[in-house]
Amino acid sequence: MFKKVLIANRGEIALRVIRACKELGIKTVAIHSDVDAQSLHVRTADEHVCVGPAESALSYRNIPNVMSAAEITGADAIHPGYGFLAENAHFAEVCESVGIKFIGPTSENIAAMGDKSKARELMIRRGIPVLPGSQGELRSESDALEAARKIGFPVIIKASAGGGGRGMRVVNKEDELFRAFQAAQAEAKSTFGHEGVYLERYFIEPRHIEVQVLADERGRVVFLGERDCSIQRRYQKLVEETPSPAVDERLRREIGRVAVEAVKAAHYRNAGTVEFLLDKDQNFYFMEVNARIQVEHPVTEMVTGIDLIKEQIRIAAGLPLAFRQQDIRITGHSFECRVNAECPDKFTPCPGLITRYHQPGGFGVRVDSAMESNNLVVPHYDSLIAKLITHGQNREEAMARMRRALDEFVIEGIKTTIPLHRRIFNDAEFQKGRVSTGFLERFLANHAA
Image 1 (cartoon, one colour):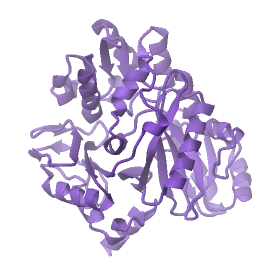
Image 2: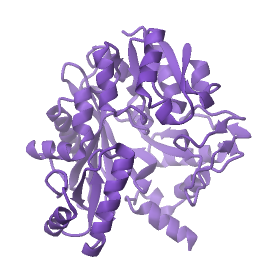
Image 3: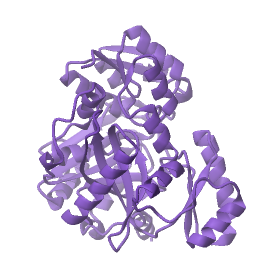
């Protein structure tokens, strides 16, 4: 087992990893920018190192500075969390080259899965169902138009190196294609440093279903059920739940089998998530593999009782999975609400000073956050400030528990998405499980009316 782990991240995920390491008896090193010097994750770790100024490119995404912090503290492993360097194949390769274990997939895994068009081609070769789309990256607007005509409108243009909804454009008809193609390329270039895009058929209001997988260094792979991430705005998830109300036991086994086949095809290691679209006829289509731990991993932990961060660490240390597929049981139901520092209707960032902060508690309630009263939410990073997770014996109890917890959650001084979550969990259609990726847009339009 590792002696010391450096956490190359900040906020709630950094604190989450630190806690897992402490339970495993592993020393921890926190890195931080100058504006995060007094943050909770810094104060909780055994050691800490400042890696630069507030701008993430100069601190949390500054590979030489992060590696120097690992070297001077004697860390023998690095956990990247999610975001920042978590899916940076070069960073993983640098770790590998100097003998520091990257707690996550290999650099080859990240590179292969990071190129969405190549990952799609791999799945096609293995007979895994994918959305109808272009063959590889598109070289020009005319190639995009030709592919779109073959597939049929509407289509969606996606960045090959993309993620988080960036570099994506929905095109409903031909005369929208050229402008959308150029905009997707430009955003892909500015965000990911690579302008390559590809094209897929766009399904109207499917469900977004993802499957959590774990793969050890010996090639054993298991799946831990599915998560329904359909409540999202501009491809950014807002509410997640497991199990999905649209997935029965037969479909769960089949989509899990395909997810396992997908990661085996890529010789994938560590924790990952295989994402699918599910249509109204229960047909599912591969979208991508996220080569990292997901923001929404706690809901899976709540229904399986498996600590995914500890499993990541154990796998990276070369230990085999301690359980088989038949050992995994899904018990009850779990929801997660992402509490963001945003105006709840316009989704505009709302940085500032938190003057009062009170977390909910009680049976079946979990809060992952690194916030406290008198903390300053700075504008330099993602707006996520807390994850509120509930668990119940069934979906109805988990929902009731979430409504109660949302009423208890107090954050003053800034605006957050808590009021929006309250409205969603009181919505009749949501309560019946009648959701899709178009739910939130309709919900907001109806609420405004």
